[in-house]
Image 1 (cartoon, one colour):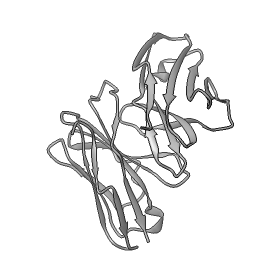
Image 2 (tube, chains in turn yellow, blue; image 1 turned 90 degrees about the vertical axis):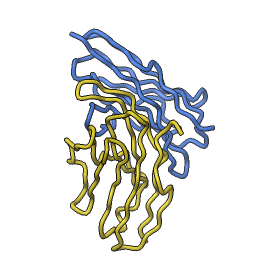
Image 3 (tube, rainbow over the protein chains, first blue to last red; image 1 turned 45 degrees about the vertical axis):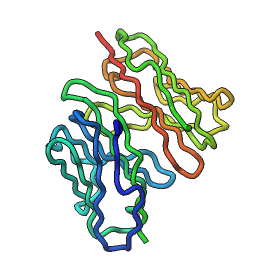
Image 4 (cartoon, rainbow over the protein chains, first blue to last red; image 1 turned 30 degrees about the vertical axis):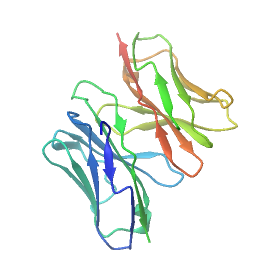
Length: 116
Length: 111
């Protein structure tokens, strides 16, 4: 496929469990973003990757959240010891942005996480 | 198919000039429409949010309009500044919470 893909599309987990969310960006896109949208809230920025490095981790809400990107492609967002307030739609986007150019962001369909 | 289309894809204007960005959507049922400003490598900043019954909403030099009948929204920037250079993203929410994203308009403000 030509677009950004995310998996799983839906994840239901119990409080205290760890979850991993995956994002496959568009091939060749160097920039990758993670966001989340909680019910009734706006889009919340989590982390940005340029290649494999993350110059801006300021949006991660707590140390239970971490993300990595390998080979400049696939990224995983890991949430440890999930809490009910982590329930949200987690969105990934990629773009051709470099450090000096903005680039159009292409969003994936999101992963809906529900923590019981 | 629910879609959000933004135009133009990119825009270059001189500092001090005004500009208008467009967002057309086919999302139904509609809940709300948001405009975001995003600098590269940074998180998006919400500019405005409008529900079905709202026609205009302002935030400083930014004014958003919504015509729910024609399913069109615009973001007008007055007296542009160099710091307005960014991507502007239109996001429409379906009732039920699903988000439909526009691809954004890249605005460059030149001195």
